[in-house]
Image (cartoon, rainbow, N blue to C red):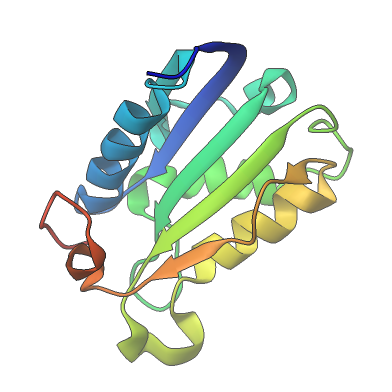
Length: 147
């Protein structure tokens, strides 16, 4: 087992049907193996003003309909997209999207938009955002559910 670090990780889930939340739960469990301070929060319960105080932010988001955020994440999305200062200068982040490639240009739109906005807000990208199709569980995800 690895030594647990003193870093803080927040796993933020923006989910419509629960699958992004399931993946975020799996990610939280994995992160707890290397970090002693990990929390999972749903975007609907997260105050965007907290972004400035984050250390590492890992976001799992679905995209619904024609490229919209999940219903419970709409307010969070609107707030984050409306920010223009650089409150995330001390934050490292990564974003993973769950979507359906049948929506073509709207496929994983939320992952791309959150990724771009976090960078504009001053955060440091840990890795390029990831995009998973509706059959993401076939790539080795243990939940076996769909978003």
